[in-house]
Image (cartoon, rainbow over all chains, first blue to last red):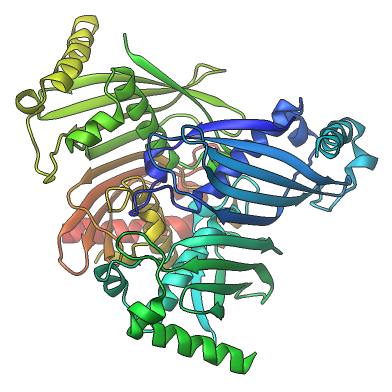
Amino acid sequence: MSYTYTRKVNYYETDMMGVVHHSNYVRYLEEARCAWIESMGIPMQYIESKGYTIPVLEVNIKYKNHITLGETIAIGINLIEYNGVRMTISYDVKDVKTGKVVIEASTKHCFTNKELRPVNIKKCDEEINTKFESIYTEYTINK
Amino acid sequence: MSYTYTRKVNYYETDMMGVVHHSNYVRYLEEARCAWIESMGIPMQYIESKGYTIPVLEVNIKYKNHITLGETIAIGINLIEYNGVRMTISYDVKDVKTGKVVIEASTKHCFTNKELRPVNIKKCDEEINTKFESIYTEYTINK
Amino acid sequence: MSYTYTRKVNYYETDMMGVVHHSNYVRYLEEARCAWIESMGIPMQYIESKGYTIPVLEVNIKYKNHITLGETIAIGINLIEYNGVRMTISYDVKDVKTGKVVIEASTKHCFTNKELRPVNIKKCDEEINTKFESIYTEYTINK
Amino acid sequence: MSYTYTRKVNYYETDMMGVVHHSNYVRYLEEARCAWIESMGIPMQYIESKGYTIPVLEVNIKYKNHITLGETIAIGINLIEYNGVRMTISYDVKDVKTGKVVIEASTKHCFTNKELRPVNIKKCDEEINTKFESIYTEYTINK
């Protein structure tokens, strides 16, 4: 089952249209992604101590409905592509109160080592790989 | 010929990786887009006085290289789709010093009126339409 | 007793020094202030429906220690001045894990009506006034 | 004479009140401060190559008037305290069109070395010290 991250909108995230500025969703996705990785039992400290980073290669967002101050969003996350070298994460962001889709998004990532060189996580970290692989398997089964 | 917007990186836009945080590019694109629209002779005040908004329907970014404090980016803009109802803008962001591509991006937009309803700008504002159309024609000729 | 707001640090809030960028604390204070006002039983929707705003007149921050990704802050809030026209809020921001003071801060505010004119909340909204006054009385007793 | 930094307001810096969100001024001050230090002939690269940082110890802002999209601010900077160990910078931010004061602000700083220990810049970098000292002398004469 997909992971869900819940989050209130802050005043400083609104713009003069009275709604959340579209750039902030990229930040919400990052928050959700970090919480999701921690929820797998991979603490950020572990990733850092190993010298890995998970850079963003691509961000794609379709804006469907606005949200504003006082509202809460639920970000559902799915790992829709994973091969140890690259992965694609999809996000489904909803207004908790109305159930309306706020944005649909995806991000693409690779894994890099201390020298910022791309690595195959299957070959260099069995612990992290097992966790991502099991999440991905679950996704492909439930799809 | 495409419009180019030039911009220095600010300290507060960097992250703990020592480079511009990936969310900031969405803001750089907006800055470039506003400057470009003003460069066509359409002041933001005119758009606002007419009650129009140009909401973002979609953002797509491919991250190619990092930039950091002290560096300057040049954002080249092209109007690659336009029909009065919707438009697609493409952005080519380069590191001015090295000439390297930093990101490649596109955004999709519509036009809305005071009631936030989508409008056909061809039908409701000849002045704005003529400007976008001429930019778009130029693009299709030079392509 | 003072209100405490707890909050994790986000990756996108760090800067190239590897710590939370100093500008973000102004946003953390706003988040804490909104949560505190809601905790008094004054929903943001009520304030908005009455046309009130509580603008920031002054921000003062002393930076004591850094925090970074993975850490959690606790923001203790006290209402240290209140007379219906103006108020001063003090904030004590601590690193939850170490107990170290991160920043000490205060903000000054007034109340404005629909026309953005300053108002005496004692005269125009007994409900809101009673709540702020009781919090302030509690502060002066416990001081 | 004091240094002046000029800057347009961006759309993404506005909030649901239709004006620049108060947290952004801390960022504007940083931008102005970096440009001012570079204008003294101290490139950021030089500071970094020496391993110095100039952390912010204190920020104090009085908000006087709002600004919004389409407007330009001019930030006048003065070095009002300097002794090699600590310095205080004052900022006078005006709306270029109306001449109205937008905010009045000051920031306090120290200098740190590679080990992030506070240093006396008089003793460890004559070049930087001479520049700050001459700016400060000018200020005390013209005051």
